[in-house]
Image (tube, rainbow, N blue to C red; front, side, top):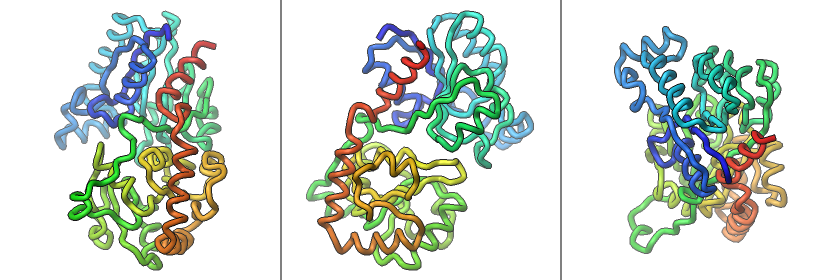
Length: 343
């Protein structure tokens, strides 16, 4: 594809979205440059308590924000991209948009979080929305809010999977002897809604639960189910070898599907998904027992599935058939962004 793009996102680790878009660019043979948005790269002040205080005072902008924006402007001027793709909630100087518009460079954001959620709220980013040529949102429920906030164009662009990161990894005979693989697995950070949900789920669930991700260990009751934060091969093995993977969305983020919706089947996992309209659209033809409406419903279905391995295997195979397609990869998502920006 005859494009030159600038990717402004987190490229510090292979699993970050910025790095995923870099690999997608390579697969499409696109010329690209990057600006890393990882704190450790551009905002070392965030390592210190005084830096975090300044961050709050400046409206969720680190001390180095002005320098970083100037570096983005230099990258745009020096590389002359056709499209600049931002990922995440990063407030920008108006000059960044002005230089793009002056040079007929499309500037877009692949937005995977809600800028109105308690965790991510950022008024300065919301003020930027009207200056983007397009917002690509992973959330249908957010599209109206984005348009009301002044966004010129909003397109629904779901999550996806990256074959480099997400693939089947069955355990070896030796691993099976010492590694813990839960009956029911939830990978994702804890928040108030999820903690309350899991508390209710455990009242009726009869199997072994495994919780992976940030903050679960800080809950006194749920700490015993916590097994760390996992990436890479460890992630693939846990998903593949857990009997059931729970696809619980984050309501505070206006999710109706999540990264796990694609990653669980891509890793060969058997998934049970929260009953949302987006999950129903995505998993057409999936067994009815593969969706849950409440903690109690989830517990009842998980208990039943633990006693019915044939049905679990059916879920695994159907999920893989639905998801493992080129059209569900981040390479396809990047291609969509480029095509829509060329219209």
